[in-house]
Length: 182
Image (tube, rainbow, N blue to C red):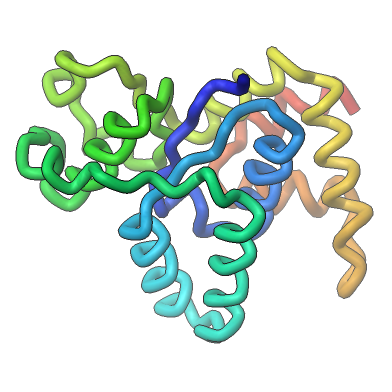
C-alpha cells in the first residue's frame, strides 16, 4: 500500500499543483489525505482569490468522490494538545490521527521541531515532496506531467507552460530537476 501523505490547504491552492499531486496519488505513488477543515480552508482561500464558489465546490466534491478514503476524521480531540502554530494545530492533529508519514505544507516554519518530537510525522515542503516523488518514480512523474499538458486543451498548454506554472506555484527545484528527464 502507498505511504500516507497529509496535505495542508496551502498545497491544494494552485490548480496545476493540485492536479499533479492528485494524479500522482491516483497512480499509487502515495495515499492523499486531508480533513474537512483543510478543505474548508482551501475553499475560503480560493474563493477569496476570485474563483467562482460553484467551481470550487465542484472541485472539492470531485476530490471527495474520487478519493473517498482521503478524509481524516476523529482528530479533533488531539487539536488542543498540539504545540505548533495555533492556526495549524488542526492540520497536525489530523496528520497524526491519520498516521501520515508526511505532512506536506508550504508553511514548514509553522511546525517547529519541538511540536513534532513526540510524533512520527515529517513536515515537508511541496518542492521537497515532489523531488522525492521524482527520485522514486521518474517515469511516472514525467508521464503524469505529459498527461497534464495534453489534457489542458481550453486553452491548450505546452509542457513548458505546465512547468512554468508549477515553478510559480512554489516548486522551482522540482521543475528544474524534472527538466533533465524530459
